[in-house]
Length: 156
Image 1 (cartoon, helix red, strand yellow):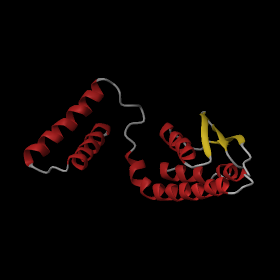
Image 2: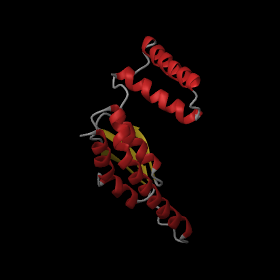
Image 3: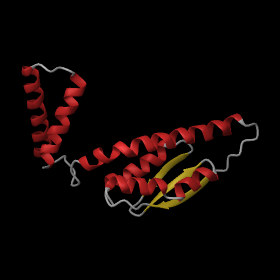
Image 4: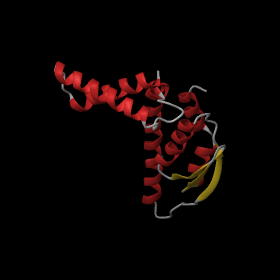
């Protein structure tokens, strides 16, 4: 099933990037996708978790939420810069990681880093070390909303 999902993903990606729908080129694109999947299998470069297609489908609701969080954090950081008396109070803290897969944990850590005002410093098995520019940004991570959203996307 893993290889079928990878072939489908590669072929759809090829279709989107090429935009060519002539029969010969469609066949060559499919052949290329099959070849890459076969080579990846032979070289043993496909990880143990496989191709997380369930993330792709549930990401449809996660990405708009994350973009909204990024926009809100951008406004907060812009206001900090514009204000003459900067209210920057850096915080270094650890937050729990509830995801059950490596892909989920990395998605959570990257989501924290993508949000302005916070950056992931280290990702461990059960926690993530975060630097936040303000106490408000730290509280947002500590509240666990993003953690729960990633868990929901993961199917937990």
